[in-house]
Length: 67
Image 1 (tube, rainbow, N blue to C red):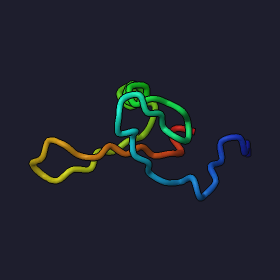
Image 2 (image 1 turned 60 degrees about the vertical axis):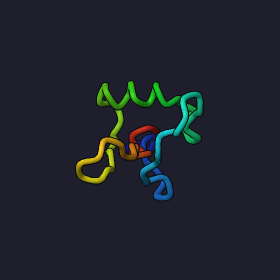
Image 3 (image 1 turned 90 degrees about the horizontal axis):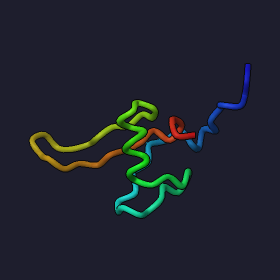
Image 4 (image 1 turned 90 degrees about the vertical axis):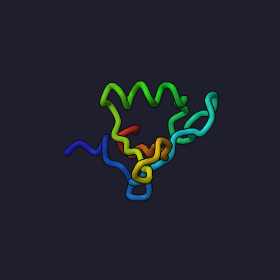
């Protein structure tokens, strides 16, 4: 088994996108627009949490899909 892609248990978590354009994600250094490009291309796993009937929510990314 190749251990190159094993993610330590403390890194198996959901993280928020940077809240402002120009900020970078702390674990990877990727910008918000870059992360949305990866989400739209299906390269990373994400989820949007919002209340039923609302337009705005919180976008989360599964950290192991970024690493």
